[in-house]
Image (cartoon, rainbow, N blue to C red):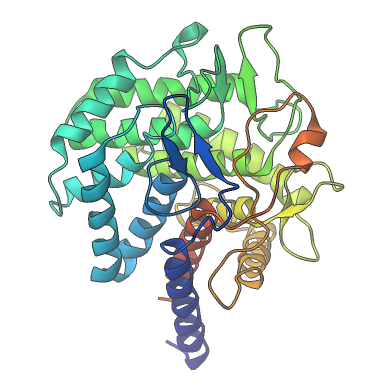
Length: 368
């Protein structure tokens, strides 16, 4: 390995360590980002010691880095989180399912025994989770049922965990259901004209709300499709794989064209330059496109490689000395108008830290 790569590798690992430290120590100092439920419970979506999709993505970031470095520190953080959270329990919904993806990997590696939890949560998704028309997974959250709604977030938060649990517990019906959910979400959420994804679709009125091609929502698809193909080890001749690759390629081609060339970031509304630049989506795109290249889902063309390099540098440029990823938008519901997306506040969040973590972990692979 060249001295330059050695230095780059050391620098990236140092940045990752700072990101992890910030991830597990983020505090909601003002209470502005706490979520109060009707039953009186308060969910801390910003701090590390609670159970929401923000923490599920944070755990997955730790897992991806642990897979590369096998560092006991990251493993201990994950195991401690699950021990404390499983003892307390939580309400099942599309977002709280997300930590089960990491739990399934840890269980498979015999680093913990989560069988009862994996079984319970996956059975709930299969048989008790609310469904839309065409039997889609309705995007039910702590506060809102989102009746008859499909969101692009669901693929990452619920469908990937379901597929992984199906493989780990040897339940092929789970895997087949996950396949169907990918096809259904692509059918209703990917914009046929641009290749980008709409944030949400409702069967009640049959429309895409504000028709927002929202950045972070799109990044879930860019991450989830390569992850799903790798997870299922779909061969090149598999029809589902070919369909997923064509969907992913259309999206990536659109992303290449709307990346901000000065910063390497993308706007929170991807095709609206008047919306602010957003770093968590950028990290997701950096990871997904880089992984798509590594898995040879897309060719290693100069335009794709250049897009990844700019995005990775954009992520690095937005990590503070304390390890916080800046320019991260708070959790965002589906809105009926574009302007509402532009008003979402910027704040440090576990998923911002995690998306930076998985992006830089993928970047680290190129320096190994």
